[in-house]
Image (cartoon, rainbow, N blue to C red; front, top):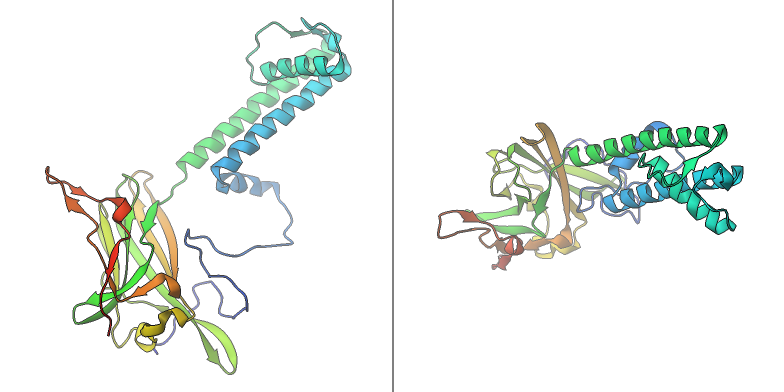
Length: 308
């Protein structure tokens, strides 16, 4: 076997029952417990959560704040709001909630107005709170939309495919956005478990690529690792690769001209996601106008070939 490289930060100790090191979406299977919450982490938490959770949380937060202010108006007396006919508790709360929302959003229809110093003070406090809340939400929306990211589609499988007079590990990628990616580079590692001094450990091997960097990325890129005498795949039983406890870890780095910043993408393949004896079908075709068309529904397609 070739010499392993330094642990890239994923750990070298074997832990029974552990999941894959990296998920297919580039996230890691790591949970941290016991850390104290810190208000300074709130921004990052809100930026990283999913869009659906963000919108639900925002809606619930606005409703709860307005409901609290509505309770306050009812508590000090609904007679402090002109234009509201006093009634039962539910009626008063609903009317106060409507007024609260109008004040919170600084909409102010004018049908209901505060009467007296106390109700006016609460209305001022609520309007000020609404301005701050919507300013924060606006900033979070901008931060989420403007966050530099890379949207890359990886082939569902990596292949052990024919390459010159031998074989190579291959996978291909395509940019799902219309942005231009420049200086796209790939780093690929193979990790496997080995026994050393009666201990099960994880070892990492950097895979040498046919091309590790391209200047432009307008279409697709098939990343190729030739399986030669220096490749760790040379020492694996490729006929029964699904029985090997390995994982191929990938990181792509590029400069996005839309964000004018460097962006990253990660992915991995387990041994059962690597097809031995196959090659990709053409990813694109030329239309009658001479443009290259890449049908994404056929991006993952491959055909089997005899391996021996």
